Length: 161
Image (cartoon, rainbow, N blue to C red; front, side, top):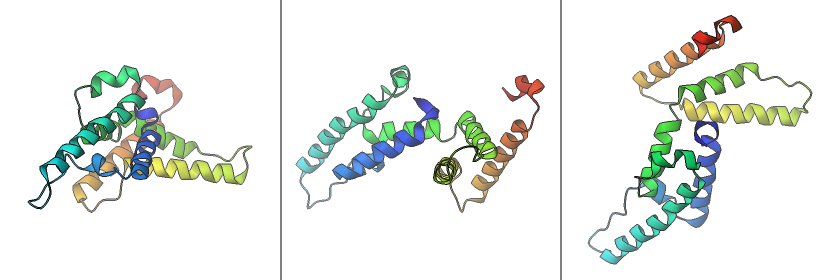
């Protein structure tokens, strides 16, 4: 459904692929065949990849299919979704807003801690730890921008939008 459930979707697809022993289809463009392997091994890998590609396709909201229809491998669909939805500023806004408004309220402690864990996972997905200083600076700037916008009063909703 786009950025609203990307993390859950990605976890589900990744877990299914791991369970089937085919997670390499998400991380490799194609199998590398050395001289000892048969060319038929590569053909089999490509055949399985085409069959597996239907899994993410079937799980994508039909409204989003035009964005993915041209991608014919698991790797390309996976990377396109990651690129689209891990840098989504509105998703980032939602996560930061969720994080800053998280309260226990009437729920029990285990439910509250589960919500804290869920928002932490979303945050880590959007802002992974990196050794790249430039990436860290960009992440910090985006975080500061979102916190600034969240702090605006209701009468400035047009600015926030």
